[in-house]
Length: 169
Ligand SMILES: [Mg+2]
Image (cartoon, rainbow, N blue to C red; front, side, top):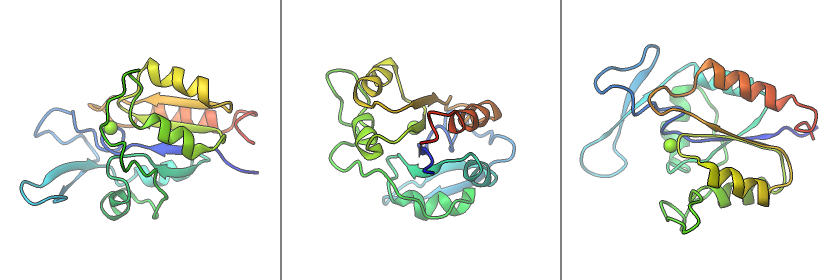
């Protein structure tokens, strides 16, 4: 039995970057990442999130601007193993005239018809419409508030989606 995919965005769901400045949310740890020379990026991460995500019933996959750098910087801190990632090379931040997020088409391609859930802080109704039109299997687009990050309610919804009969292919 194959499991649904869970596409994971980093900034927003795992890193609640829009939380009140200088007030790290409870339970989170701070890392500073120098992806480019200059001022390092501050990232808040929750060391307990990996084990929760691994227990939801999905095959996990990064869907983030971090791409494979998420395996180096994010995975060890949240407690995840090395994960596959969606390659957004050539699509990063490219605005589309139809308002569909630049990640969406690549994610649908990656899924190849498998049921999936996708947590992100930037989806819109245009993305939901695109997925409905181009992906026949069940798909859950779960919007996460970047001021809060992933919460119990998100995990409950994801867990439930993974165990609905038509999601379990
Ligand atoms: Mg994001």
